[in-house]
Picture: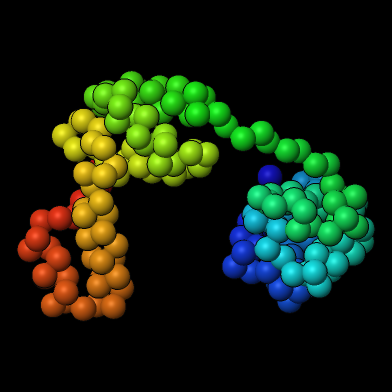
Length: 186
């Protein structure tokens, strides 16, 4: 097996990242047949970073493979696209999303009404990750609650996280005293 660097290109999207981090990884000896580099959100790479990546893909074609994921394929320069196998995923339908969420609820033994589940789909569509997150955030005592019932709780959670990051103990105490937050964990 090989170590797999995974870079989120929306955070590290400049030419220096490509030249330094990726090149230093792929230019070293590969224990396996080749090294694999995964660039998530590659559509956020600058044009200079994409050009450097293209040159690197050519130079290290013998011992490195690259996987680029993106939401906006039109932002990837044609010269870089031509060196890739493009695989597009179609948008999930509301019916497929509803069906998958129902499977999750059944597996987790969570009760839900059809109206509540439809509301979750309406709020999240077409983002399946958001839909699953809404399921996680809107369950109380084994029952799925409508997302609108949890808006104050979500708002309190966001405030609590911010207060914790700032180490603002007065605000933390104030938020905790409202009881409007969700504590998760085992």
